[in-house]
Length: 405
Image (tube, rainbow, N blue to C red; front, side, top):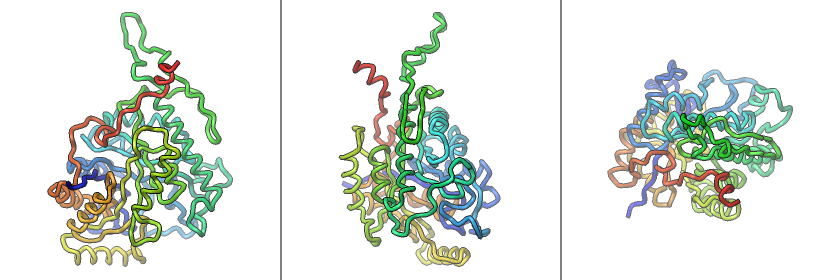
């Protein structure tokens, strides 16, 4: 039997190649246009893509990019990812919408209510991708912290930086607060009994009374319990500390396996995630694992290589990524997805090097190939993102506690 996976797409401004905005098929004048994002998300939605993540950051430079000497030949500026998702929610039908949120500066209360509102606007298709930590440029934009993460340590290991370790502890607390706020209204808290004049059963709305290292949140969410109960929590993880964050707090983790890079074999990643989940996870639901691929797609391998060489020359450096890069035909990308499916991942998230060119290539060529070989998990008509991914709708923890009493 062929192993099946869901396909996700990661959207990033003009694409994941820094020079993608200079591609002849690019739409650089429309990057801040709602029509641009509507077209991308509809293309993915119509193809049967299960979910889309939308990148975001809180500064003009990219994360850990130097403040001085900012390159002017790369895309700068972006629209807010949560607001993009909210705009396209009523314009799409089935695709999950998962904007990126940095956990260091926003308040979890604001993020919780924004993602709950997105869940209502999308009729149960909302999620969020949490990013731990913040750069000096992001910190300067808020002005509330005098110190924090300056750069990755020379070793590249999160555990060698006390500041990054603190940022991940904060991210874990942030995720915990989100889940508690999403649970703070029981499903049946709203009565709407006009005859008695009772709109709300106040006994079914619970203050979360959270006191942690980084956050102190007393009350309940201002948004009633949303269609999914809890929207999807996702994390991108590359090593031990973020693996543990994902295992403890997330519904879904994006990983970056590459058999040619030491320490990034998929079996090793899965083993480490499983061990962390056994130790930390209290949710009965299994952590879903999606593998990332950065893709550039042309009809022939020679054309794909030529396109990459042209973009690399424009940028002045070869394309690099934390994810494995696949440059070639739709068949090459489909083969890479099938390899990951056979290795047991739940899904594959494709990062298009160029938007919209590679989004169209995924939708019109890669997805049909995967469907023809029964590699693609077909849409079963489930109403919410959770149900489409075979994740149960969680009961409010406060309803459970009430029953236990």
